[in-house]
Image (tube, rainbow, N blue to C red; front, top):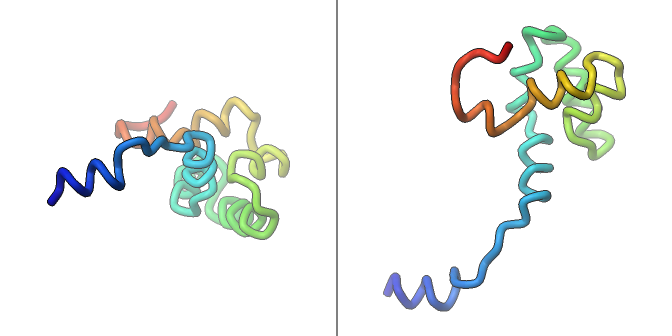
Length: 88
């Protein structure tokens, strides 16, 4: 049964990497990574603005002048978050 499922439903599927990255960078959950850098209140504002405007968190945090694009990319990197440890 699982072979049939794999052959008929799974085979040929390809991930939309850019769309997945957008979803990851738009998740309110990753905003907690911003707290040590911009504080809870500013991070909450970033989340609310991103949701209202349909933008990812990194874009909004830069547009609001709270971080540089380089710092936002480093702090909000979902791949780095999966590795554990403290970002510097």
